[in-house]
Amino acid sequence: MNQKELKEFLDFKVKEYNTIDFIETDPIQIPHKFTLKEDIEIAGFLAATIAWGNRKMIIRNSNKMMDLMGNSPYDFILNFEDKHTEKLEGFVHRTFNATDFSYFLKALKHIYKNKGGMEAIFTKHATKTSTQIAISEFKKVFFELEHLQRTQKHVSDPRKKSAAKRINMFLRWMVRNDETGVDFGLWKEISPGALSCPLDVHSGNIARKLGILQRKQNDAKALEELDIALRKMDKKDPVKYDFALFGLGVFESF
Image 1: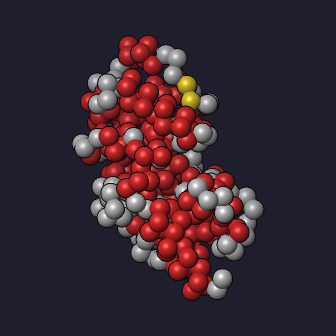
Image 2: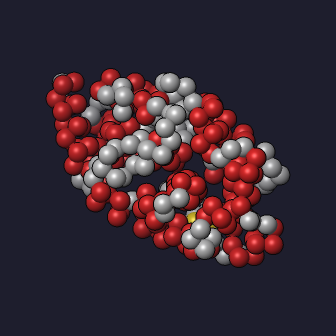
């Protein structure tokens, strides 16, 4: 395919997969359970944090997290104290355990009570063309409190060569308004054109098959390469192509 044909093909696939039906098989269904802005943000962030591995397990464990918070995540984090950690005992998703979960709740409480919320941090550091430095700065704030070193691995840092797939996915959910009811478009001050594609095994492999990604590792350099290619196709909404790349990889085994 030439560039024009490739864009037409991917645009068609975006329309095929960026529909309300996408929600029922994706972790984005977790924040869709809520209507309060802060509930959506917190549920989305926690679901995105554990979004690796089997999708059914991700959704099941994300729902378990919501249940442990009484399905009122914002209220729960605002009132979270050390004495509540017992309630979290036994929770585990792969390498993310109850200790990590407890720290995440403390950090979120700190951010909402003292930093103006997650949106304020990302908005402060995002530029018109990138959110990658904002992700790195968010991680700094997130780990301002005393914590175990092991917990840091659950928040990626683009400055350390990570593609930061899960946070890029979370930002897509919060920033992009797709007008189909999938992505929320809650955060108005960050441009959708500054977002980066959530690069993982599926989207990376499809991008390489289509010739829009050459680098073999799914790291920050690969993400930059993919960003350039997708922005050539749509500079205002480049991450819409995440639906096409993901759908082709997961649903069609392209």
